[in-house]
Length: 128
Image 1 (cartoon, rainbow, N blue to C red):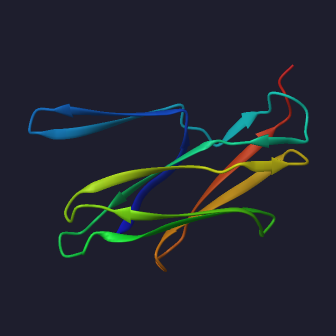
Image 2: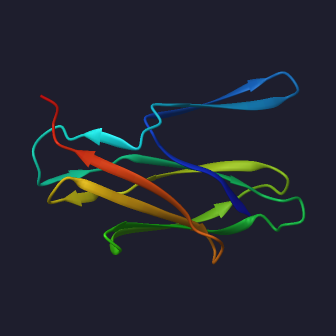
């Protein structure tokens, strides 16, 4: 299996179209956000990971996401994956991230011991 996409989002919707075929509507794709209040705070953005499974793959594996700040692990999520061979699926990961100061974290995503996809996310000072 492999990661097709990994993005922080506000919402995801799946819809069927003729074929039959599936459309994935992602809204609010983001790489940063203004904090709702001054730090320290806990922030929990939604990370959407879309996974593809080759037809010759058994369709099972483990998705691991490690959230890092300045190279240090601050949160980790591991969950089983099951994807029908020749198809795709998605997982939502919501890390509870502690911010003592504004800055960037990186979500390091991988399936089993495969290649790592890194997605940055920056918490900015409150608007105003």
